[in-house]
Length: 158
Image (cartoon, rainbow, N blue to C red):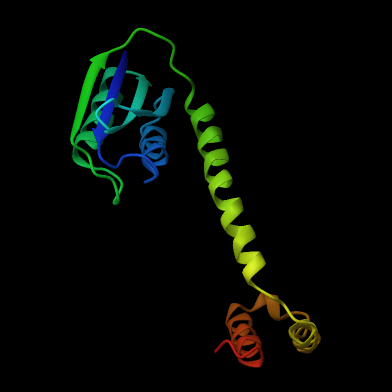
């Protein structure tokens, strides 16, 4: 069974909708899923979902799509129609979503790096704290937590 789902609303892009849909498709062990963002002519955003699987799993997926959405999404309508074209593999969507999220995260991480300065004094303090930590603490979770607290205190982060 194949189906095309169109999710329309003022805010369905950049809210994690495709990752949300992927998670549900994977939880239901659906073999086929393709998702992409689209702009409708009236200024509305759309997420197009192409789905393939057995009838019971697709019905369960439809119920999830009708009842739930990502927290920041604003949905006006959800439509379903039969589909007879190609549908990608869930693993392909998972890989694509990973790349999209990395593409968004890398510039943010670079900004954080540019705005964070590690001075030579901080580096020396970290080295000194590191030398104080005895080997073997890693086996004790409680001891590691105490060491982390001590490091934070020495760095003025407590």
